Length: 233
Ligand SMILES: Nc1ncnc2c1ncn2[C@@H]1O[C@H](COP(=O)(O)OP(=O)(O)OP(=O)(O)O)[C@@H](O)[C@H]1O
Image 1 (cartoon, rainbow, N blue to C red):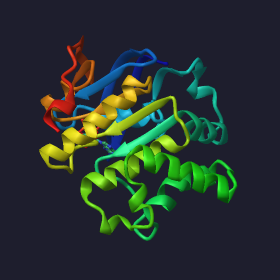
Image 2: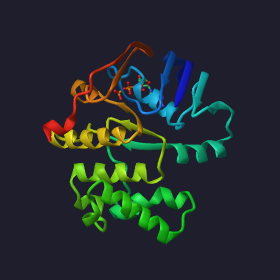
Image 3: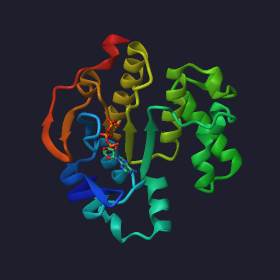
Image 4: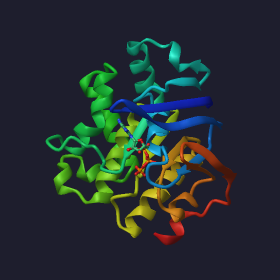
């Protein structure tokens, strides 16, 4: 699914620079569910953003689904990103003046899908996350957990091969976090490859593999016995 070799990334800080990723090697196979952990500032989001093609590395190789990313033009990269990657964020990143259905339909609009088709597709995905009765509601009328489910439906609408999540439960209470994790595990059971950044050990334990970063290097990468979230729901 993805292969990263000797990835480096620095940010300019005044006259000097901050070396954030210092030679990351990572391989993720199709169907994996991986947690990226590490203390604040260890480079987790930077790595996820590069994997999500939202940012570029300074050096190193990144191959996604067989394609070397650095060879892509910006336009091709955007097409590839929309087609292969789905994103979930801690803060949901929904558009607050659009209802649930419109939020889920938005990526399909960018894919050039016709209105009727994208509404049907969006409704299908809202049903999948159990929110078809809430289709006409705005984000402010929904709970945090419901909004995260809308965001998951939006991420899934374009049928991405890889789902990237940056602290997907970070803004949710424990019970709602477990509901969202149960749902994400179900997606993984169905074959979706998932990579998520988390601070929380119990959430990481619900993945199948934990990669720990420290000061820009991988200090541990291990498979774990997956704890099922539905037992807490
Ligand atoms: N655009 C930027 N410009 C300058 N420095 C940045 C930028 N983005 C991140 N950094 C710095 O790079 C380091 C790594 O940031 P990153 O967000 O990847 O860490 P993180 O492990 O995700 O942290 P957290 O858990 O706090 O979100 C931090 O010191 C951060 O301040």
